[in-house]
Image (tube, rainbow, N blue to C red):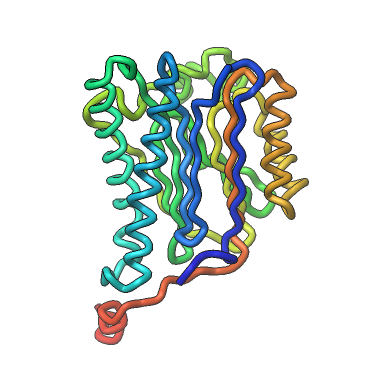
Length: 275
């Protein structure tokens, strides 16, 4: 089963108006239903190295696993190898490689990256994230932030020191408390939920929400929902119009058809015997 034609993807990344180069990295696999976005940090292009490793590692491992599943090389009764676990393990593997590279290459010392990735399978989406790169969902006219930032500001909101409205206006939004490559181990936050036909999912680096209010993100996606490429470009343009102080990456996915997974022999037998 391929997801091409059942989920539409579009993605744009831009250096912004202030940064000299782009330390964000993005990748998609429409057949596998996979999107990966990373926002690197570190001096002398090291952030670009970290985000590139993260995206290449997760995209490569997950794309290969999904293709093996679809060819029937893997028999599973729970959908793609428990897709959330596969995402988590892919991100952990990326963290290990980035950390080892930072330890062994002096020019990469201190580098790290945030990451958010989504895997669609069997009418569901699994999301993995570390840091303040985000996922939103537009459903039935309502925009919902799916991920919560791993940041000092979000912790203060959680503890009641800031309201959500005050946090939106804060200038101290970029102190992340979790990132890939900083430590040998990393805690990866995982979510999984059912999707609906018509859902639009947005993955973005902090260069978008730092410059554009959620209400304007909502209005833009709703206005250009029939053309995801235009919607992506418009979101980047808005971020740049509001200052473009950081790199901006935007990825959109729209569910156009249901995509139930084909059930293997073991799964069908289990259902027959009530297992």
